[in-house]
Image (cartoon, rainbow, N blue to C red; front, side):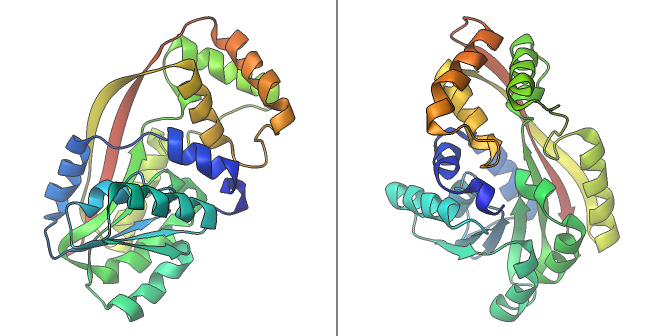
Length: 263
């Protein structure tokens, strides 16, 4: 993810990014038959939202991310929770092929990658991952809901309008969560040699306060568009006017895993 995700952005990411419900972790564990002897690689792990709950299902997890501040926050979260079976690796998708020499072929039960998928060369990642995966294991491209400003709700549309006014740009990207992007990932998994490619999902609703809404926005803005400290109050007031005086915003989240299996 690079330097856009350093410093304060990493802190907001750790605090405000959605976690994963236990039911979704159950879904992944069942899909790949995860057990006490397995190792999982989480590419683009960020601050560990998926890495940490996966660690409770397997022998160990490698959480890999190119941003040191993200990994520092992830390590801190693991220490706070007493999770000791995660190896944090500074690197990106381009480093995955080298793991075959370090871990050995067919050494992983699963490789997971979340919303960072839209920032990487996914075709190369999928091809590099397949030799690492044991039979019955596989790869999961995880979409943890759509961005806060791209949801089918009046408050979300108002948020998007407010952000577009502030940033003076159109927010068209869905960060790889839209149907067209998911179809591209599906086709790429099949082209890379994965079998039984299918999608599984878990739906839930959550209520956000205004501070959580703002925190979620900060966590996704990246350093290039992140308001400086002296702009912060004006930005938050601008967003408050855009979304109105409500103190609660209900988001409907679909956590989806596009799953491909290794033969």
